[in-house]
Image 1 (cartoon, one colour):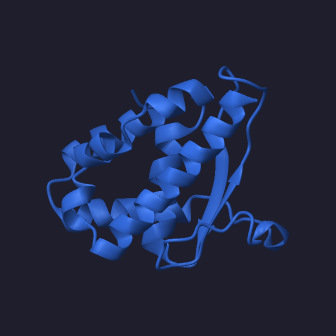
Image 2: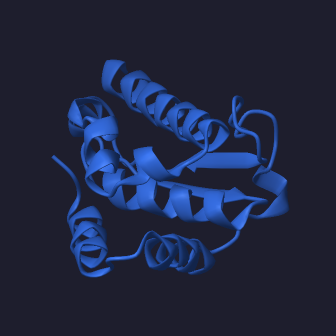
Length: 142
């Protein structure tokens, strides 16, 4: 279960045969994301466990399991910024209950990311997914 925006990325990846083209596409997705205001780049929004600087700012509408999940994010590394855009496409617009049901590893595996990211980048993606799941579970329980 993934948001429609993620399905569109998956379809684009099917047409891009070469991993270098996919890599460039991920970077372009990151470039299209608006930057975060410096005021929200604080320890509370920083994701630990990433080799790069990463901040995720939750934007959740409503309360409880049916609250709508969204977030903004930024990184100092372009590929990581692109990975944030991919995660944004995967999760944004889902209810927090749906966010908790997403198998991020399987969905990202559909893109071939698991085979083409360095161990450090893979760890960073896992840390971002864990933060997203934590934010969703806190909202679902409220």
